[in-house]
Length: 357
Ligand SMILES: *Cc1c(COP(=O)(O)O)cnc(C)c1O
Image (cartoon, rainbow, N blue to C red; front, side, top):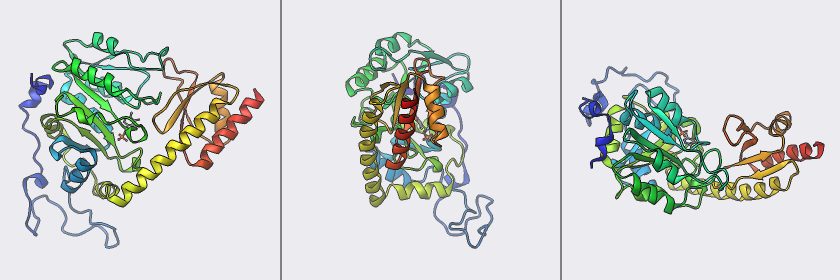
Protein backbone atom coordinates (compact mmCIF):
# COMPACT_ATOMS: atom_id res chain seq x y z
CA UNK A 1 0.00 0.00 0.00
CA UNK A 2 1.16 3.52 -0.84
CA UNK A 3 0.96 5.84 2.17
CA UNK A 4 -0.76 8.46 0.01
CA UNK A 5 -3.71 6.07 -0.33
CA UNK A 6 -4.52 7.37 3.17
CA UNK A 7 -4.53 11.01 2.03
CA UNK A 8 -7.62 12.92 0.89
CA UNK A 9 -7.85 11.81 -2.76
CA UNK A 10 -8.92 15.25 -4.05
CA UNK A 11 -5.69 16.72 -2.67
CA UNK A 12 -3.62 14.31 -4.75
CA UNK A 13 -5.24 15.89 -7.83
CA UNK A 14 -4.85 19.45 -6.50
CA UNK A 15 -2.90 21.89 -8.62
CA UNK A 16 -0.97 23.57 -5.80
CA UNK A 17 -0.47 27.32 -5.65
CA UNK A 18 2.73 28.19 -7.44
CA UNK A 19 4.29 31.37 -6.10
CA UNK A 20 6.56 33.73 -8.01
CA UNK A 21 9.37 32.79 -5.66
CA UNK A 22 8.92 29.10 -6.54
CA UNK A 23 8.82 29.60 -10.28
CA UNK A 24 12.00 31.64 -10.65
CA UNK A 25 15.59 31.55 -9.58
CA UNK A 26 18.74 33.46 -10.47
CA UNK A 27 18.70 36.89 -12.12
CA UNK A 28 19.40 40.17 -10.41
CA UNK A 29 16.48 42.32 -11.53
CA UNK A 30 13.46 40.89 -9.75
CA UNK A 31 10.22 42.08 -11.31
CA UNK A 32 8.19 38.90 -10.90
CA UNK A 33 6.44 39.17 -7.53
CA UNK A 34 5.02 42.70 -7.42
CA UNK A 35 7.36 43.62 -4.59
CA UNK A 36 8.51 47.14 -3.89
CA UNK A 37 12.05 47.71 -5.18
CA UNK A 38 13.06 49.56 -1.97
CA UNK A 39 13.43 48.41 1.56
CA UNK A 40 10.83 49.82 3.95
CA UNK A 41 13.36 51.47 6.22
CA UNK A 42 16.97 52.42 5.67
CA UNK A 43 17.76 51.35 9.23
CA UNK A 44 16.10 47.90 9.13
CA UNK A 45 18.46 45.05 9.99
CA UNK A 46 17.30 43.22 6.90
CA UNK A 47 15.51 44.05 3.68
CA UNK A 48 11.97 42.83 4.04
CA UNK A 49 10.64 44.06 0.74
CA UNK A 50 11.19 40.62 -0.85
CA UNK A 51 9.04 37.55 -0.24
CA UNK A 52 10.92 34.77 1.59
CA UNK A 53 11.71 31.38 0.08
CA UNK A 54 8.72 29.11 0.85
CA UNK A 55 11.05 26.30 1.99
CA UNK A 56 14.43 28.04 2.43
CA UNK A 57 17.20 25.90 0.93
CA UNK A 58 19.94 26.77 3.43
CA UNK A 59 17.67 26.22 6.42
CA UNK A 60 16.35 22.95 4.98
CA UNK A 61 19.91 21.70 4.59
CA UNK A 62 20.92 22.69 8.11
CA UNK A 63 17.79 21.08 9.62
CA UNK A 64 18.17 17.93 7.51
CA UNK A 65 21.76 17.57 8.79
CA UNK A 66 20.60 18.14 12.36
CA UNK A 67 17.85 15.51 12.16
CA UNK A 68 19.79 13.07 9.92
CA UNK A 69 17.32 12.98 7.02
CA UNK A 70 17.43 14.28 3.45
CA UNK A 71 15.94 17.65 2.51
CA UNK A 72 13.12 15.87 0.64
CA UNK A 73 12.14 14.21 3.92
CA UNK A 74 11.74 17.47 5.83
CA UNK A 75 9.01 20.11 5.96
CA UNK A 76 9.70 23.34 7.83
CA UNK A 77 6.76 25.44 8.94
CA UNK A 78 5.37 27.81 11.55
CA UNK A 79 5.99 25.62 14.55
CA UNK A 80 5.19 21.93 14.72
CA UNK A 81 1.64 23.17 15.29
CA UNK A 82 1.48 23.96 11.58
CA UNK A 83 2.73 20.45 10.74
CA UNK A 84 -0.01 18.96 12.94
CA UNK A 85 -2.58 21.10 11.13
CA UNK A 86 -1.31 20.22 7.64
CA UNK A 87 -1.21 16.49 8.39
CA UNK A 88 -4.75 16.69 9.74
CA UNK A 89 -6.02 18.60 6.71
CA UNK A 90 -4.07 16.48 4.25
CA UNK A 91 -5.23 13.12 5.54
CA UNK A 92 -8.57 13.61 7.32
CA UNK A 93 -11.83 14.07 5.43
CA UNK A 94 -14.42 16.22 7.22
CA UNK A 95 -17.26 14.17 8.66
CA UNK A 96 -15.60 10.86 7.81
CA UNK A 97 -12.09 10.38 9.22
CA UNK A 98 -10.91 10.04 12.80
CA UNK A 99 -7.65 10.48 14.68
CA UNK A 100 -6.52 8.55 17.76
CA UNK A 101 -4.94 10.34 20.71
CA UNK A 102 -3.77 9.23 24.18
CA UNK A 103 -4.86 11.80 26.77
CA UNK A 104 -3.68 13.49 28.88
CA UNK A 105 -1.59 14.81 26.01
CA UNK A 106 -0.85 17.91 23.93
CA UNK A 107 -4.10 19.66 23.08
CA UNK A 108 -3.52 20.59 19.44
CA UNK A 109 -4.01 17.07 18.05
CA UNK A 110 -7.68 17.14 19.05
CA UNK A 111 -8.18 20.83 18.21
CA UNK A 112 -6.74 20.40 14.70
CA UNK A 113 -8.94 17.34 14.17
CA UNK A 114 -12.09 19.16 15.32
CA UNK A 115 -11.36 22.18 13.14
CA UNK A 116 -11.09 19.82 10.19
CA UNK A 117 -14.29 17.98 11.17
CA UNK A 118 -12.55 14.72 12.01
CA UNK A 119 -13.61 12.65 15.02
CA UNK A 120 -11.26 12.20 17.97
CA UNK A 121 -10.88 8.76 19.54
CA UNK A 122 -9.35 8.85 22.99
CA UNK A 123 -7.31 5.99 24.41
CA UNK A 124 -6.21 7.25 27.84
CA UNK A 125 -2.67 6.73 29.13
CA UNK A 126 -2.46 3.98 31.73
CA UNK A 127 -2.69 5.98 34.98
CA UNK A 128 -1.90 2.89 37.06
CA UNK A 129 1.17 2.03 34.97
CA UNK A 130 3.29 5.21 35.00
CA UNK A 131 1.05 6.84 32.40
CA UNK A 132 2.37 4.59 29.64
CA UNK A 133 0.52 4.49 26.32
CA UNK A 134 -2.02 1.69 25.91
CA UNK A 135 -0.75 0.16 22.65
CA UNK A 136 -3.37 -2.59 22.61
CA UNK A 137 -6.09 -0.02 23.26
CA UNK A 138 -4.77 2.20 20.47
CA UNK A 139 -4.81 -0.66 17.96
CA UNK A 140 -8.33 -1.62 19.05
CA UNK A 141 -9.44 1.99 18.51
CA UNK A 142 -8.03 2.19 14.98
CA UNK A 143 -10.75 1.78 12.37
CA UNK A 144 -10.83 1.90 8.57
CA UNK A 145 -11.55 5.65 8.97
CA UNK A 146 -8.51 6.35 11.15
CA UNK A 147 -5.91 8.52 9.46
CA UNK A 148 -3.60 9.73 12.23
CA UNK A 149 -2.42 8.11 15.45
CA UNK A 150 -0.71 10.73 17.61
CA UNK A 151 1.99 9.70 20.06
CA UNK A 152 3.85 12.33 22.05
CA UNK A 153 7.27 11.33 23.38
CA UNK A 154 8.26 12.76 25.82
CA UNK A 155 4.58 13.38 26.46
CA UNK A 156 3.25 16.79 27.36
CA UNK A 157 2.06 17.12 30.16
CA UNK A 158 3.19 13.87 31.84
CA UNK A 159 6.85 14.05 30.74
CA UNK A 160 7.75 10.41 30.13
CA UNK A 161 8.86 8.84 26.85
CA UNK A 162 7.44 5.98 24.81
CA UNK A 163 10.27 3.47 24.58
CA UNK A 164 11.73 2.53 21.19
CA UNK A 165 10.46 -1.05 21.27
CA UNK A 166 6.86 0.00 21.95
CA UNK A 167 7.04 2.58 19.15
CA UNK A 168 8.46 0.08 16.67
CA UNK A 169 5.70 -2.42 17.45
CA UNK A 170 3.08 0.28 17.03
CA UNK A 171 4.65 1.40 13.75
CA UNK A 172 4.66 -2.17 12.44
CA UNK A 173 1.05 -2.75 13.46
CA UNK A 174 -0.15 0.50 11.84
CA UNK A 175 1.57 -0.04 8.50
CA UNK A 176 -0.93 0.55 5.70
CA UNK A 177 -3.65 1.49 8.21
CA UNK A 178 -2.86 4.96 9.54
CA UNK A 179 -0.06 7.48 9.92
CA UNK A 180 1.85 7.25 13.19
CA UNK A 181 2.73 10.83 14.15
CA UNK A 182 5.45 10.92 16.81
CA UNK A 183 5.77 14.34 18.42
CA UNK A 184 9.29 14.83 19.76
CA UNK A 185 8.97 18.47 20.79
CA UNK A 186 11.00 17.64 23.93
CA UNK A 187 13.27 15.03 22.32
CA UNK A 188 16.47 16.92 23.15
CA UNK A 189 15.79 16.58 26.88
CA UNK A 190 15.38 12.79 26.78
CA UNK A 191 17.85 9.95 26.43
CA UNK A 192 15.76 8.09 23.87
CA UNK A 193 16.84 7.92 20.20
CA UNK A 194 14.64 9.79 17.76
CA UNK A 195 11.94 7.82 15.95
CA UNK A 196 13.19 9.50 12.76
CA UNK A 197 15.32 6.42 12.14
CA UNK A 198 12.04 4.59 11.43
CA UNK A 199 10.98 6.69 8.46
CA UNK A 200 13.16 4.98 5.83
CA UNK A 201 11.39 1.67 6.37
CA UNK A 202 8.06 2.96 7.66
CA UNK A 203 6.58 5.38 5.08
CA UNK A 204 3.60 6.00 7.37
CA UNK A 205 5.71 7.32 10.28
CA UNK A 206 5.98 11.11 10.71
CA UNK A 207 8.22 12.68 13.35
CA UNK A 208 7.65 16.24 14.60
CA UNK A 209 10.49 18.36 15.93
CA UNK A 210 10.60 22.01 16.91
CA UNK A 211 13.05 24.82 17.63
CA UNK A 212 10.59 26.21 20.21
CA UNK A 213 11.79 24.28 23.23
CA UNK A 214 15.46 23.19 23.54
CA UNK A 215 16.64 25.63 20.87
CA UNK A 216 15.04 28.59 22.61
CA UNK A 217 13.18 29.96 19.58
CA UNK A 218 9.52 29.76 20.62
CA UNK A 219 9.02 33.31 19.35
CA UNK A 220 10.34 32.48 15.89
CA UNK A 221 7.73 29.74 15.31
CA UNK A 222 9.88 27.15 13.53
CA UNK A 223 8.82 23.51 13.52
CA UNK A 224 9.67 20.53 11.42
CA UNK A 225 8.04 17.35 10.13
CA UNK A 226 10.23 14.42 9.08
CA UNK A 227 8.63 11.81 6.84
CA UNK A 228 8.90 9.95 3.57
CA UNK A 229 9.23 12.33 0.59
CA UNK A 230 5.65 11.90 -0.79
CA UNK A 231 4.11 12.88 2.57
CA UNK A 232 6.42 15.91 2.76
CA UNK A 233 5.47 16.88 -0.80
CA UNK A 234 1.78 16.69 0.08
CA UNK A 235 2.37 19.01 3.05
CA UNK A 236 4.21 21.48 0.82
CA UNK A 237 1.39 21.36 -1.73
CA UNK A 238 -1.18 22.48 0.84
CA UNK A 239 0.92 24.87 2.97
CA UNK A 240 0.48 28.65 3.03
CA UNK A 241 2.27 30.36 0.10
CA UNK A 242 5.13 31.88 2.16
CA UNK A 243 4.79 30.37 5.63
CA UNK A 244 8.07 31.56 7.17
CA UNK A 245 8.91 35.23 7.81
CA UNK A 246 12.47 36.18 6.77
CA UNK A 247 13.65 37.21 10.28
CA UNK A 248 12.50 33.80 11.58
CA UNK A 249 14.35 31.99 8.81
CA UNK A 250 17.49 33.93 9.80
CA UNK A 251 17.07 33.11 13.50
CA UNK A 252 16.54 29.41 12.77
CA UNK A 253 19.49 29.23 10.40
CA UNK A 254 21.69 30.90 13.02
CA UNK A 255 20.51 28.39 15.65
CA UNK A 256 21.77 25.53 13.45
CA UNK A 257 25.35 26.84 13.30
CA UNK A 258 27.95 24.82 15.27
CA UNK A 259 28.51 27.44 18.00
CA UNK A 260 24.78 27.78 18.64
CA UNK A 261 24.26 24.01 18.67
CA UNK A 262 27.05 23.67 21.20
CA UNK A 263 25.42 26.28 23.44
CA UNK A 264 22.07 24.52 23.06
CA UNK A 265 23.45 21.15 24.13
CA UNK A 266 25.18 22.74 27.14
CA UNK A 267 21.91 24.35 28.17
CA UNK A 268 20.04 21.08 27.68
CA UNK A 269 22.56 19.30 29.93
CA UNK A 270 22.15 22.02 32.53
CA UNK A 271 18.36 21.82 32.46
CA UNK A 272 18.48 18.03 32.77
CA UNK A 273 20.59 18.37 35.94
CA UNK A 274 18.22 21.01 37.27
CA UNK A 275 15.28 18.72 36.50
CA UNK A 276 16.72 15.85 38.53
CA UNK A 277 17.65 18.13 41.41
CA UNK A 278 14.23 19.82 41.43
CA UNK A 279 12.43 16.49 41.12
CA UNK A 280 14.11 15.14 44.25
CA UNK A 281 13.62 18.36 46.16
CA UNK A 282 9.91 18.63 45.30
CA UNK A 283 9.27 14.95 46.00
CA UNK A 284 10.46 15.52 49.59
CA UNK A 285 7.94 18.28 50.34
CA UNK A 286 4.83 17.58 52.37
CA UNK A 287 1.71 18.30 50.37
CA UNK A 288 3.25 16.68 47.29
CA UNK A 289 1.80 13.28 46.50
CA UNK A 290 3.76 12.38 43.36
CA UNK A 291 6.29 13.75 40.89
CA UNK A 292 5.84 12.00 37.57
CA UNK A 293 9.01 10.69 35.89
CA UNK A 294 10.08 13.20 33.25
CA UNK A 295 12.43 13.22 30.29
CA UNK A 296 11.29 16.68 29.25
CA UNK A 297 12.03 20.21 30.52
CA UNK A 298 9.10 20.17 32.94
CA UNK A 299 7.74 18.19 35.85
CA UNK A 300 4.15 17.13 36.40
CA UNK A 301 3.62 17.28 40.16
CA UNK A 302 0.55 16.05 42.01
CA UNK A 303 -0.49 17.82 45.19
CA UNK A 304 -2.84 17.22 48.09
CA UNK A 305 -4.20 20.69 47.28
CA UNK A 306 -3.09 21.68 43.77
CA UNK A 307 -5.15 24.86 43.69
CA UNK A 308 -3.69 26.04 46.99
CA UNK A 309 -0.17 25.31 45.77
CA UNK A 310 -0.88 27.11 42.51
CA UNK A 311 -2.08 30.15 44.44
CA UNK A 312 0.96 30.03 46.72
CA UNK A 313 3.28 29.96 43.71
CA UNK A 314 1.33 32.74 41.99
CA UNK A 315 1.53 34.99 45.01
CA UNK A 316 5.31 34.51 44.94
CA UNK A 317 5.15 35.62 41.29
CA UNK A 318 5.75 32.11 39.90
CA UNK A 319 3.34 31.11 37.15
CA UNK A 320 3.01 27.39 36.43
CA UNK A 321 0.44 25.47 34.40
CA UNK A 322 -2.55 23.98 36.15
CA UNK A 323 -3.50 20.55 34.79
CA UNK A 324 -7.02 20.87 36.22
CA UNK A 325 -8.55 20.37 32.77
CA UNK A 326 -6.64 17.13 32.09
CA UNK A 327 -8.63 14.06 33.08
CA UNK A 328 -6.64 11.99 35.55
CA UNK A 329 -4.27 14.83 36.43
CA UNK A 330 -6.71 17.31 37.98
CA UNK A 331 -4.57 17.39 41.12
CA UNK A 332 -1.36 18.26 39.24
CA UNK A 333 0.63 21.29 38.19
CA UNK A 334 3.11 21.34 35.31
CA UNK A 335 6.26 23.19 36.27
CA UNK A 336 8.76 24.17 33.56
CA UNK A 337 12.41 23.86 34.56
CA UNK A 338 13.88 27.37 34.69
CA UNK A 339 17.20 28.81 35.78
CA UNK A 340 18.54 27.66 39.13
CA UNK A 341 17.28 30.87 40.74
CA UNK A 342 13.82 30.37 39.25
CA UNK A 343 13.72 26.78 40.44
CA UNK A 344 14.73 27.91 43.92
CA UNK A 345 11.80 30.33 43.85
CA UNK A 346 9.49 27.38 43.09
CA UNK A 347 10.88 25.39 46.00
CA UNK A 348 10.73 28.24 48.41
CA UNK A 349 7.08 28.99 47.57
CA UNK A 350 6.10 25.34 47.80
CA UNK A 351 8.03 24.82 51.01
CA UNK A 352 6.08 27.64 52.63
CA UNK A 353 2.86 26.13 51.42
CA UNK A 354 3.81 22.72 52.83
CA UNK A 355 4.63 24.33 56.18
CA UNK A 356 1.35 26.19 56.17
CA UNK A 357 -0.59 23.01 55.35
C1 LIG B 1 5.21 22.99 22.55
C2 LIG B 1 4.71 21.79 21.84
C3 LIG B 1 4.49 21.79 20.46
C4 LIG B 1 4.40 23.07 19.69
O1 LIG B 1 5.57 23.39 19.16
P1 LIG B 1 5.69 24.61 18.13
O2 LIG B 1 6.78 24.11 17.28
O3 LIG B 1 6.05 25.78 18.96
O4 LIG B 1 4.41 24.79 17.40
C5 LIG B 1 4.19 20.63 19.82
N1 LIG B 1 4.03 19.49 20.51
C6 LIG B 1 4.18 19.46 21.85
C7 LIG B 1 4.00 18.19 22.56
C8 LIG B 1 4.51 20.61 22.55
O5 LIG B 1 4.58 20.57 23.88
